[in-house]
Amino acid sequence: MELATVLDRLAVDTLVTEYARAVAGGDPEACRPLCVPGAVLDDPVLDVRQENRGRGVPRQQGRGEGPRPYQHLIVNRRVAFERRDGEVGDLAVVDADFVTPMRSNGPGRIADTVRGGRYRMRGVRTAEGWRLSEVVAEEVWQGGASAAGPN
Image (cartoon, rainbow, N blue to C red):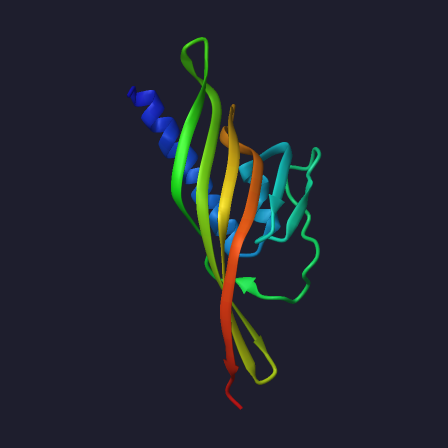
């Protein structure tokens, strides 16, 4: 493996980590510097399901005051670079799993939920470095428990 490929792999891995941190913070605006304009984002954890034409940042929709992630772990990352003419190109594909523990506090109740699933991400090399052009998440499972909170 060439040094350039190793450096690209590290850059793509860092990009995925920054995306996980943006999701954990529940902040779609934090995605702006991570995405190319027109990026396609479909992520039920961030509650974003739409094509983001030309804005480079998702618009949060849906759930309102539901559970909010306090951690979002993107694990078991598999990074592959698409080849052009036998050479490693400027496109990356990431397949990974995610686990997201969440807590929501309501009047007299605490609910813990854990969600898990898979990501398929595409990255492109830009003049500013690697950026996401597509993020598609599929939630595969969900579980949790609730308990009476402090009175």
